[in-house]
Image 1 (cartoon, one colour):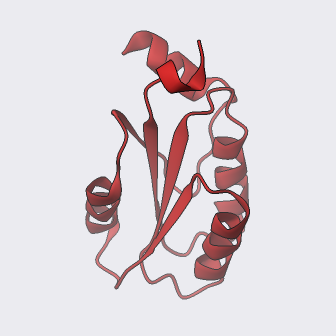
Image 2 (tube, rainbow, N blue to C red):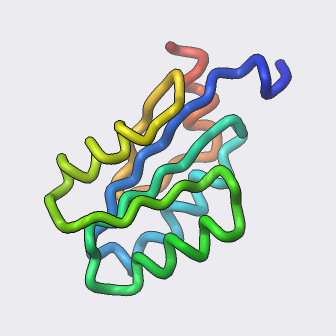
Length: 111
């Protein structure tokens, strides 16, 4: 199946004080076997290096969108990501988690 026939999946990652885990999380999303993704990193005014890490990833991959917002908690960060999402399917990943390589591929099979 060509990428144009695959539904776009918006993966939303709310981020706050996750500097220690963020790169593992984002790398696991970038390495998905399913490629038609937009990755929305929502920086919830994290006081560590997370805002800079997010911006560096966005500068290197055009599938990544970064939202910097005032701190409002994880639910508000997820909602900000939802407002920006363009995908037919939505996935949420916490910044201290990671995905197995075929996770998004399996999601499209079961949806």
